[in-house]
Length: 250
Image (cartoon, rainbow, N blue to C red):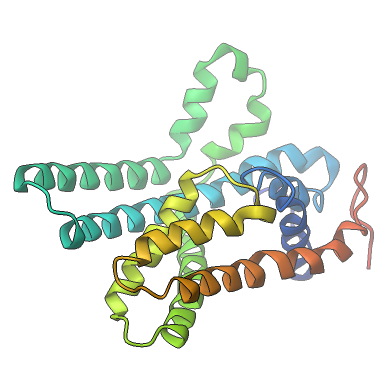
């Protein structure tokens, strides 16, 4: 958000918790945008949504790239395909990954596309910030996204090692990446997302283990730790919000 408004580290933490609280009640975490940008001054909130989308796009890029690679490895290991079809899938995976990487590091193209549309041109003051991000900044954002991906992956990894000993580490990493990839493509509501997560995890992990209960326990635990508990804590910050002005001071 530094390109829009300077906020303190503590205020940034408040905005994240508030976003998590509002996210659980909205489809595909849309409320997270609103919860975070209400910690900006009113005139900068719409621009803040666009800026926050850059970080979410970076997260989506990593999720899709790692997920596509993991899915390719999964097909190689567990699906019996004709070698020509498998080769075609590999080419598709490479093109898929390159597309997301090139698009992210040239995100100003999105600004140009929106400017070329008559309907959206009148809102350019809100999305013109997309043209200001340089590749060095985008790379830094992507590193933060990578750290976030590593944290969530490590949580799953530790729980699966703890609850289901004997699994190969590479298999766990592959399945976690596929799990993130599939989850990112499915419409969901965080409050009830545990069902979708559990079904997806049970299906894919079923190829490497028959401990369905442990798989569901791992998935539910992560859901509880990363979504529900932070959302409950975030209600404190939601009550501090001033929806029509600047956030209330501490």
